[in-house]
Length: 384
View 1 (cartoon, rainbow, N blue to C red):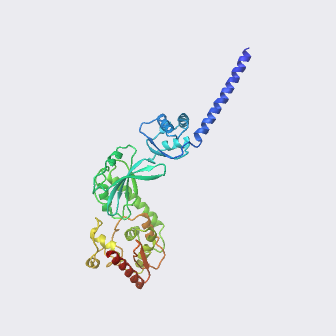
View 2: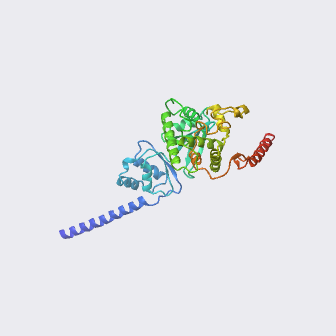
View 3: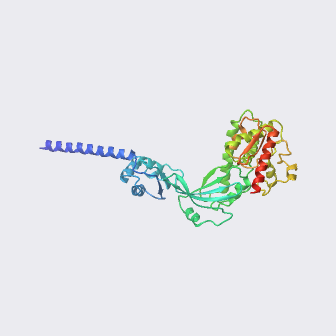
């Protein structure tokens, strides 16, 4: 009898073990399998949230088929205590394993609302936007100029959100003075700026920050990045360059940046200036003359006078035979690369062509013809 009972018990144990193994195998497959999401979502994980609350939210949004499996899987992977607060983009058909990785890996939020403080060449603005998970594109919710108008109510509202991301974006060609003034206008930054960084030393780019970040800290990041970009470009410079130092490259890059806003033209514009330097010709570029007058503090607001084009100043490249003494703006990576790796052309001249670009030429006769075309276009526009 006891043998019979023992045999039944053993059979029951084996069956139970078999069933348990099957459940574990099924759960493991479910954890790794494609999820039910048919459209990406933005998952908000609040500070202090648990995997239990996150799994319920995911179930409610149709992102997982079984929240219990997600919790068990996270626990088995020893990630239960690694849950991060923020807003995270969960792509369509994301598996539970992938979702756990998304909400535990850390780093910046990948969706939700962000405020971008844009520092431009002539003006600044603030953009409030939100990522649409369905399209993967940002949708503008508000935009305003802090020095000209009151901030809309939504601006204050989103700043209260714990997961709202903040960024400052610096445009290529902005001067150091403009960057400092732009940072001063950002009300969520902290601290003062002891002095304006030297011209050209700041890398135009986008920089993430949090409330209370010192302005000097952001400027230091910009300086470090520009130094790295400049050194890398200098190390890979063309043998044809007449430039004697990385600082000269930065000066020429800033002139290229101010002369054209068309990416495809940078190499050609660079070739004109390099050819002029190689032939001992004056650069003859208006932006340097303007910088000599404004020192990079705002716009000239008018055309150059003949007396200013004839005046002997360190920045008047119609008079001096070389580069000006400093950069005239903060050039971006592409202009720095162009200065040190210009296109191989014979161009000596260029002038606006009426389309936003420039007409390039080798001879003075061709250049004069291009100038005449440009003046005709200007005259026609003024008569409209």
